[in-house]
Length: 86
Image (tube, rainbow, N blue to C red; front, top):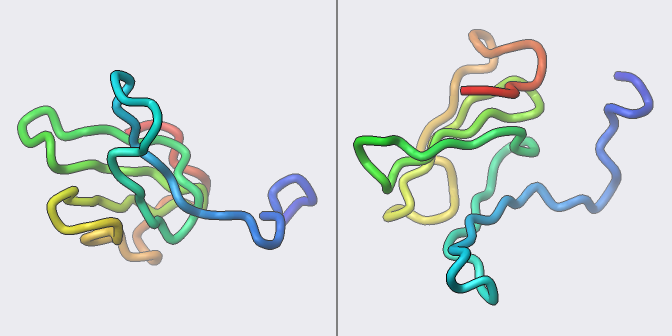
């Protein structure tokens, strides 16, 4: 790992989804296993979000089930670089 790729100690991994009409409070807080690089809503089910992580994993969330990811790609079959687009 190169110097610029290291994660600072005490850095939060949490990501937040905001409603621009109510910017005072986040609508949803996500707890990924690695920092999220990209995220998309499922166009057919607005409760499902898919996220690409810095460590190459792809995870998905169901906002009806809370902040933890519902499932994640297995590390053996994941990308070896950050996922920048889904």
